[in-house]
Amino acid sequence: SDHHLEYPAEPKLMDWTRHYPQYYPAKEGEEQKKVEFADIGCGYGGLLIALAPVFPDKLMVGMEIRTKVEDYVYERIKALRVQKPGNYQNVSIMRMNAMKFLPNFFEKAQLSKIFFLFPDPHFKQRKHKARIISNTLLAEYAYALRVGGILYTITDVKDLHIWMVKHLDEHPLFEKLTDEECENDPAVPHVRTATEEGKKVERNQGDKYLACYRRIEDPYYN
Ligand code: SAM
Image (cartoon, rainbow, N blue to C red):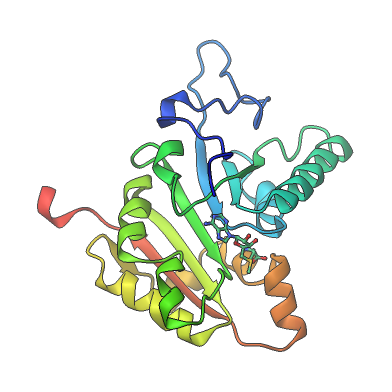
C-alpha cells in the first residue's frame, strides 16, 4: 500500500531543497530551476548517472517504488557528489509510485523528457492494467510534458513494445520520432546502454526495442 509514501498535495508544495541543495532555493535575482527530466522506475540509477554530465544544467529525478533501490541510488549519488565536487548536483532520487502520484509532483508542461526504460512487462493478460503505459497514464504524462518534450521507451519484451507503441500511436498528444530523429537525440545512446537492466539484456544478447514520442500541441485547443 502507499499510505507510508510521502507526496505533496500539489507541485508547488513540493520541497526540492533536500534533493538539489545547490539549486534550491534560487539565488537572489535568479529564476528557480525546476526538475525537467523524470526517469520512471529508474532502478539502480544508471541512466541518471550517465545523463548528469551530458545535461549539466538540467535537473533530473529518478522515481522508484522500491525502498532498498531508492536507498542504493541515494548513496550512489551522495558518493559521486563527494568524489567529484560540483558535479552530480543536478540528479536525485525519490521513492514514489509513479502510477499514482505523478501530478502531485510536476506542474503542467514542467518536464522536457520522461523515460520508461525496461519497465516491468506484466506478461499476463489480467495484469496488463499494471503496465506503466496506458491511456489513463498517458494523459498524465502528456500533462507533465511540455510541447516538444520527448517520452522515451525501451524494452527487451517485444509484446510490451507493441503494446506501448499501440497506446502511444493512438494518443492524440504524442507523435512518433522517426528513426533518424532517434539516432540524432543525444539521450538515446544512454537510453540503450546506461541502465543496469539494459546491460543485463546486452549480456544475454537480447533484443532492445526503442520507441520515442514527441509531445505535440493539443489539436482541439489551438
Ligand atoms: N529502468 C531501470 C533499468 O533500466 O535498469 C529499472 C528497470 S526494472 C525492470 C523496473 C523498475 O521499475 C523496478 O526497479 C521497479 O521497482 C520499478 N517500478 C515498478 N513499478 C513502479 C511504480 N509504479 N513507480 C515507480 N517505480 C516502479
